[in-house]
Length: 493
Image 1 (tube, one colour):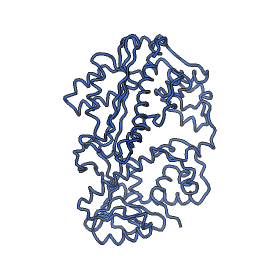
Image 2 (cartoon, one colour):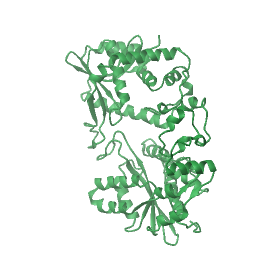
Image 3 (cartoon, rainbow, N blue to C red):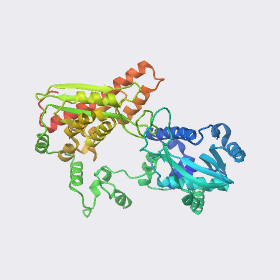
Image 4 (spheres, helix red, strand yellow):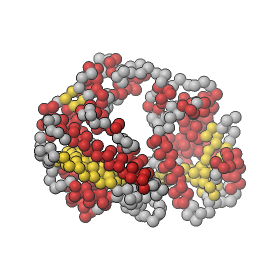
């Protein structure tokens, strides 16, 4: 009989079809970069946790890869009499198996701690510990309590590899111990699913919650495809309800379904194939913000486990900016900052930003909340620079509301991201022509590779060039969007 791992049971909880495919057709699974990155973060947090729960190095780490499940389970049982911390303790029953992140000896038994890289306890974590506790106790563990440790994103790293305080615990013993019946039902249901044919489950919210499913392409291929998906309607909350009724396409929307003005605009332009542009309104929006002006964009990186003193878990750290300055007669100048030294770039970034943004002119961005928040964080970290940084925030002008209110093209598919608006408004510009780095995720990956100590100098130079070209296009794209919105298309930029 094939045993079910905890991950397989959680896959069943998300969607029975996902479990069946993981067992019978794993070749259809398409793993994205975000999923792989999350696995890596999980391993990093686990390594830190072992040091926190076993500062004297007295514990034992079970090596499941070298020992195999059965031998690892035997090894774990032998260690239960030693009263020392156990990591990756393995428990096997006739039907299921689990690996426990941390086992700590307590009076007449053990305390279990499951370690997660999230910043709070999620619903699926409660399922997780319920499975862990049942299987471990069925395998003979005298389990007294079970907790979930997660990252405290308010904690500030003091430096010097001191991670005390990174993790906080929440005791979930009562919840976990009270769900034995539920877990046994999950196991029975999962076993029945595995033994049958591929379940017929329609795609829906479960395809992305709580995890993105790598089988979505396979499952969706069997379903009718809309020419103009209802999902393109912005902030539309009835998509799932209509999908269950077989309504997938905007052209099939019942008259009884009320739409907001914005949703109706998207539907009308999409079905007609025409674009909407309120040119006079766009000019009026920008008139209060005369040139010269600066066009600004940031790139950031975040670490679940901070590597620089004074930073927090998952804090967005600015490492790059691009600025185009546009003069009153259309003269364009460019300035950039990029720190690939591997040191905390924040202070140098802030100082260079202040120097590059002038004193009184408007600073144009696209989606101002991001830049404003990053600047406010820098101001908080560096009080001596606070006044000048917040002066930049006071001058920020957001181009996103102008685009959202004044322009729409069917190719945007319900999105007003700059990468959706740009090719519609300025056809000759495209991120697809960039080498290597073509989006924010690619910029983060390139940055991490560039600061890695084993990256060669030649490769680092290539990554530096790609990052600079990408960020420069972001701000040049804003200049070109401004040009159209401001009615300056006759300028040669």
